[in-house]
Structures are given as C-alpha cells and as structure tokens.
Length: 481
Image 1: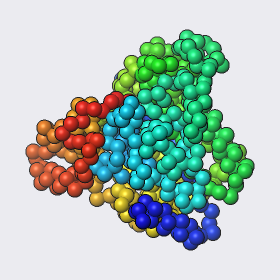
Image 2: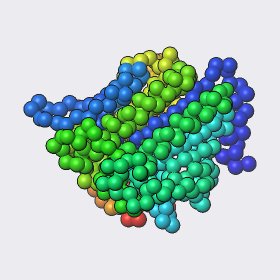
Image 3: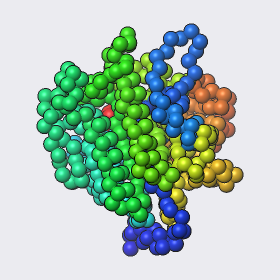
Image 4: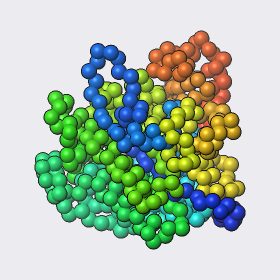
C-alpha cells in the first residue's frame, strides 16, 4: 500500500482515540507580501527626526494583545508558491515539491498526488476543510488541483497569473467557473468612483469565508473545521488583464488627503482599511457565533514586503532594520509577522522568540487536532508546548533551511541559533551573520568564523535533495509573482 494511504489509515484509526475534549476550529489567515513592520504589533523603530508615514491596524493590535506574538518567525520561502508549499506540506525548500514561482504549461507548477498536505491530515481526522482565496500550487486539470489535496471546498482563483488582477473576470467555486460580468471594462476610475459597479476580489473572498463559517456553525456545529483564508492583500495588482500595475482598492480613504504618492495611499488603504478592517470583522463574527473560545486563529504573511507595482517598500519602513525584501534570502524577505490566538488556552499579550517556520504549521495543528501516528517525514516541529506556555517541553529546530530558485540564480540559507549562512548563487561564497548582534545583516563574519561556516554548510548539504524542475544549475525558467 502506498505510503500516503498508510498514513491516512493511521490517522483515521487515531481519531477513535481522541479525548472527549473538543478539538478547536482552526483558521489560518495568510496575508500576501505583508512586510514584517507593516502592522502595528510589529511597528519597527523609526530613527528620531524621520517623518515616516504610518498605517493604523487596531484590530491586529488587539489580536496581539489577546494572543501570542512571535518575533523569530519565518515564512516558507521569500516568494509565494514555494512558501505556500512549505505551509501546506510541512517540508522546507530542500525537500518540498515547489521551490520557486515556476510555470508548467502556462500555469503554476503543481503538487503531485503523493504530496500530503495539512488539509489531507485534518480531513482524515474528521475536520471539514476549506480554502478561500489564493492557492498557487496547481490549477484545475493538473495534479495540484486544490480539491485533490484534502480541501472539501474551494472558492477563489488558483492561478497566480490571474489572482492578482483585483477585478477578475471570474472566480472558481470548486470546479465551477463563476463569471463576474460587473468587472468587464474595470478601471481605476470606475471602480473607485462607483465601487458598487465592480466586484473587488478581496471583498468576494472575505464575504464567502464569513458565509462558510456561519454555515458550518449553524448546520454542522459538532464538526470542527479548518479554514485557510488566503487573502491577496497587499500584493501588487491590476485591473482586468493588467498584472501588478499598482495597488488596486475600491477606496483609499483615509489616506487620499495625504501628500503621499497615489500608489502609497492605495497600499496603506489595502492594509489599514481592508486587511485590518476585515480581520476585525472576522474576530467579531467568531464572537457573535459563540465559537470564539473554540477557535484557534493563526495570522502570518507568506513572505516579506514587496517592491512592485510602483510601491516602494522603503516608504513605510516595511522591513524596518531587516535587510532585503520579497525574493531575498536576507531577513527582510523571509521573516514574517506571526500571531496566534486561542482564548482560554493561549495566554494573552505574550511574546516568544522561538525560531519557527511555516513547516511547523502542519505538525502543530495535527497535534491540536489530536492526530496520532503522524509521519515523521515532515521537517516542521509542533509548537504546541510554546502555545500552552510550556517552553520547557518545547522541542527546537537544530537548524532551519531555505533555498530559492529565481529567474536568475539558485541560492540557499541556513539559520542555526544566532547564526545565519546565506548565498545567492552557487558561484558566490557564503556570507555569515550573527543575527543577535546584527539583525540587519551588514557585517559578514565568514572569514572570522570559518568553523561556523563549515558547520552550517554541512547542514545545508544535509538539507538539500535534488529537484528536477528546480535544479541548482539552471533556474532560468522561473517567473515572477
């Protein structure tokens, strides 16, 4: 019997052993290209005398006050598809199927049938599983189709080539394409002056997610659910077929009266007036439905701040002291805001410097769902002890690993304790940084600490397995999103 099915059988058997304690609903809210310092809980220090624009995110502030904030948390990769692959499969980039934004037959590079996702695991443990928003791991008709990887329900646009058009021609509901005729001829002028004449994709995704939650609570109150709400804000986008030509929003208030460039007004509105607003609406809905105490909400971003569509990541100090931004293996490309809340279980207004990555999501929620006999082939660790304020019992990563196949070169990085080893090409030497004393990665210590370079290089060799579609020698077929 194939390993995949053996694992599912073991999971199904384990469900019979689950204690009488109610298992939590699990909601993962994933922002798209939200910089480490772009929300108030992570607002980074601004040097005195600098008049730096700020965005208000009061709902995320309240969320952090009611939950656990992570200050050493990493995404899966510095770019969308490979980061989301790690989130879904629990495998770092040295083992994962998808290691860059690359096309296959005009669409996203797909998962294979043998790839086990967090939705597979939770569904086999009795959870209802749903994804609303961005998938990016395979379109309909490929081996990576979302509903073939554990999700009972899907609403959104799977293709990264299309989903960043904020006024798309259609959305997918399961296998059905639903036309959006209001978006014919969509333009900035029309959709901002008369927003009711256009369908803004973020609003569609948010409202459908809320409808889904209400339906599950009213019709299936005894069955726990897993909702992966993959928003596309504040990724650069466009209108109609125009890709990444701005930061489309139906309304850029209250920033429209500032002297900021228009694209920065729109970017701020994306985060403050839409992302934060709707995160607050989500939390209010859980309270209204009486499932607040029974629901764990996990918030993060898929990678660092972007620098696209006319937006400058420096305008809002989006990465603060961190070097680099999206697509970079420096900290600014991969360190992510991460906050987790579960009333009466997770101590409020707490903070941890535990080093975590997206690979930890799958084993963590599997433990919360009382899944037993989980395969040990995942790279992530369960962070449940940290969530339950039992740091003494927390297993820690020996090291964490990243690699990235770009349009230009293949690079990789290793984090071990305070040390960070990174290179951006196989033709370049490794750089070494002490993150405890140099979070901005400005002082290369590779010559001074050659023994540390040797140790972390050995970790990098152990972590990497060859990948035919994402080879070390030739990464020239990737595309940018």
